Image (tube, rainbow, N blue to C red; front, side, top):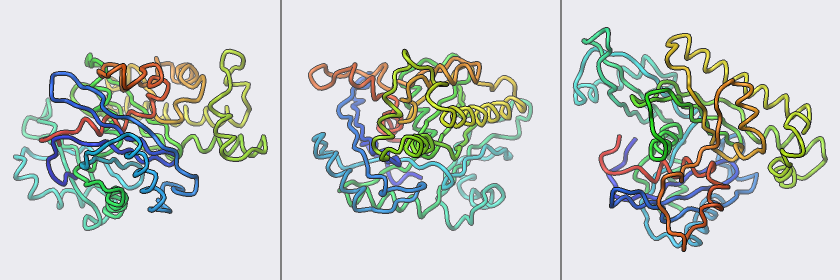
Length: 351
């Protein structure tokens, strides 16, 4: 789903509750952060993953770009959820050129959409160990209407779209730029307002990708109802309680029940993966997204999943000027920046 080959990009992550924008410089052997910022969206702008008000979203993006002083116009965005199908398939050995000529025929057998309604891309992962005449291919299909909606909004904000990516891949890019891969599988999980994206990968690439229709809005609405608060006040309450004074379990039975249901869904996903390949079970989990900032969530998931769980810091190894950025301030919002940073890392020749 590449539109051309840019040299430097703005990563634009449009979430249900906020827009995140990131730009980095990679002209040396280091990655240097040039710009990062985020702007909240009104609850009515995006509902159930549907963009309801293009002008409002584009206006917030335009304002954010102006506030950050970004003049670059080339951008990358990501999509996720029902609009994306990612499948690992096996095919007879083909060259990339040969596969490009037949990918639509192959896709018809593996995706639930009409191939005329999607943009297709693929990555050849290589021959299978036990079947040298067969290769593994990662097939990606994105709904054209969703891609076009994102593109229209970025264009309204004065940007030129160069790359359409997938949230799961952007998370992996951000992780690999900041953390060593020792061969053991890692689970990067983006906890958004309405969607949890799970990408289990190792140094060879993605092993398992799934989007779960769960998210932080569930918890906010429960707090809103039980405490009779506005949505904004309930959102603030969700993120401000003190885990040193209260356990997560004491916040409320409904909240705990929701978080436990999240953990159960994630465990089922990990068990499904391990059933086909026990060596693919994640060795640790990193949490990103706005809902990852819920106090006490990482240790709660660690207990439930019986795995090490930590917050994802996509700036861990990123160079930055102390005159422009306060590293401690960035660390507090870092989990929200993972997708935008992963998008900003996209470069010429990427697939």
